[in-house]
Amino acid sequence: MTAQFIIPLVICFLAVWVTLGDPLGTPKELTCLLASFVGVVCGLWFFVAAPWVLQLGFTVMLLASSNFLPKTVLR
View: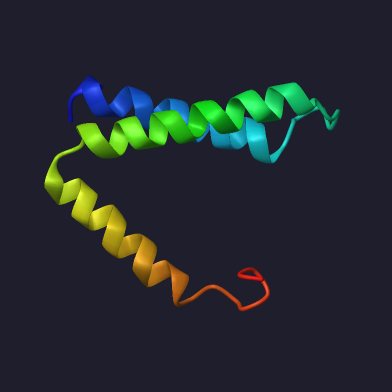
């Protein structure tokens, strides 16, 4: 795996971690907003830069995992 799509994947995971929960428990709306924007951009960058095998694998994994989610999560 090259750094061309490893770096955006790591940045995307870090942005999701910042968006979903602050370790100190203090709400910072601007930080969460910026982290969610960076996460979406890096997620798209990863998906475009990744080889087609990884793209297909992540798409199948996403579609398969949506069948196992409880219905309360999807509301």
